[in-house]
Image (cartoon, rainbow, N blue to C red; front, side, top):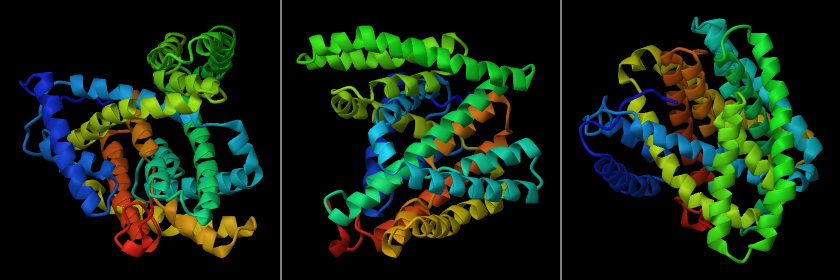
Length: 395
């Protein structure tokens, strides 16, 4: 992904030590400040990276290792894509998600045009504005209150459909990365995808599932099998011309209906988080602070669109679909930010040559600002596990 150097002359062991020890300190500060910990990891990268104190300043090894976190992230997203969960609120979720995505794509695209960015760059700015954060949307949602069970269902349904839209964006970027005839390459991607799904489904159905049933009591083996399945399908997808990320997502989807999907999800989350911490750190370390004067104004505008206009649009659409005003308003605010998925898209778009480095930095800065503002608003107004008001704090 990011072709950056962030390790210096130090050993990889020292770099991991510095990243995680410092991340623990910054995460503690973030929790006291009522912030999502992802903000702490990105800021830590800014501080320790080449544009900060330069404590970790060379080698792309850390960045390459962090890519595994994205693979596991997509894998777990696929595992969470339960057809029955989506079908429950399918009509409402599809209407709300597609309508809001279209609106925010247009707003992001217009911001890009207004600030004289190229047509393609403006398209990508519009695309990243379509998504809301799974980390903030779900991690700050208390599940112990009856009211929030329905709110959670709405949020999960919207986020799942957004994930599917994001996969389409990744496919398009994958086609662009091939060079040559863009339309032809995108068509090839769309042809390869059913091939991948078919092969993976058949393998899961007739081999993997039988192994799981046969040895389901041996947790160590299931854990090993789950990792091998994720990385194996990801590598196979890359071999036939798709991306590791899409392969991992398909690997997760094929296992979503398995009786041990929840077990795999819970066991892999710590592994995913380990690599994602490195990923978000590498994003902060790669951020070119010399570009801030060029991008701060559009970044602030994009962040404010997400934090102010997104809640209004979601609230209107949900109310129009028959939800109560209170639930609609709260759901809108909980979805009022840009997504960490947008960070992934910006990285892939930069590596494919679809956007310039300043556009990638613009997206990163707008995501960071929206995270900070949205987290504050949510913890001040609604029940969360880290609410600033004790009367709002819930497990």
